[in-house]
Image 1 (cartoon, one colour):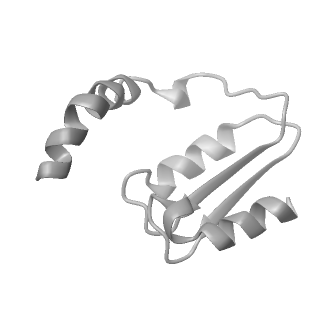
Image 2 (cartoon, rainbow, N blue to C red):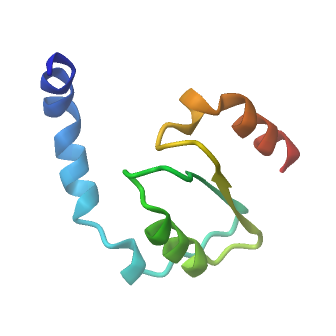
Length: 89
């Protein structure tokens, strides 16, 4: 509980603003390559929503990486795998 009591005042205003944005209603055009990483077990950023966003993306090159046995914090739990993917891209 201590963690959340310290976390909430700093991050909840940002989350409230982010949740008010509906990116699927807007055009998502990028002039650079876009690479999306999502953990297969991510309950914060669900795969279905991420996949819808990815399909809508317009970019010269795009790729979606779905990491197995990973949640929302990929760099914390799958840092070597993520680093290898980034280096190979």
